Length: 199
Image (tube, rainbow, N blue to C red):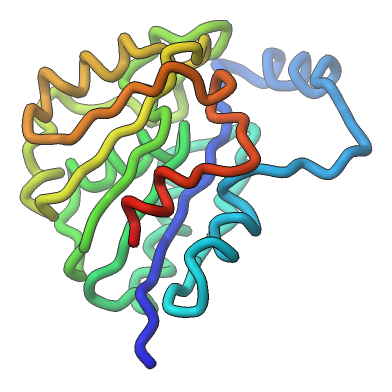
């Protein structure tokens, strides 16, 4: 049985300089608890055996650089089959938006989901640098595929629905959904809505 591939790009952070990054490392909250997130085992278990979930661990996710992510992402492309489903979460969402707006994807894309993807540097207490800035023309995104769904949460203080409105102006054919609450920045253990949409 040929499995449907789901390629998911995780989130990350960017910093203006090394000093800011080191300060983040010194003050970041640490925990011994296992982090349970919808994009982890839940996604794989909920989709079932007809799907192959591919999760590249993008380089230096806590101090990300677009060019490094692009190089590593492209290493996976020879293994991707037609009708792949792409998911980008947070920084992974703007990574996919930028990549697909600047490059012709080599395989047929069945659908793309961008979850709490920032549009620009209007963040809450975070910088969007490292080459992740979008160009003004995003039209190639919808030439790569026709089905784009963007998901936001009204109570997300990091990537507010303001970003959704900016994407809406550039990508009027995108399906944009703003949930009342997904525990802020989609800090949720389950996400049945996206499972239903993928299936």
